[in-house]
Image (cartoon, rainbow, N blue to C red; front, side):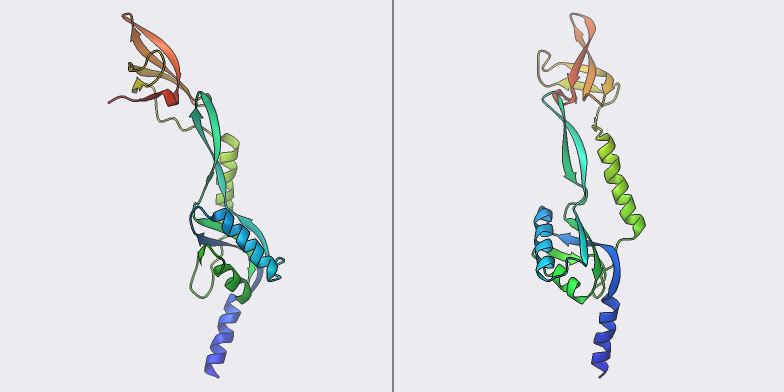
Length: 193
């Protein structure tokens, strides 16, 4: 009788009829596959009304390739998947036994949902990356750099100007006894030793 009371108490702890966001630790690099498996298993179990959203947050990251700015999607939290769900014993069992899922972040007997503030902070971070996709240029005015390619390969110069939007820097090099400004892509230079 005592054991049965404990079981009912645990079931009550896991029963949550409100939609909340939970975090799954998953096999890194398998986030999309885990979401696909999870959606399939949830649908087969007739729980589609209880699990309403899946997310592997992505942000934009800019770089320079062959004189052009390239924006790629990058996982904000590699190895983690977020889902919005009600929570009960059945959902908890299906989710944690989905291939690729290592654990639901939280306590052993009751998953702990993300707070609204934590979720909003993550969404703000994603929105900011979508808006600007700024290029992170590791050079600043005054740095001594070595030109890696082109007509001035092997020459050293001082960075005079940085244009993050275009991924370009102006480097002042000595040529024929004079300082000459050269506009060059950031992927064509490196810090000199």
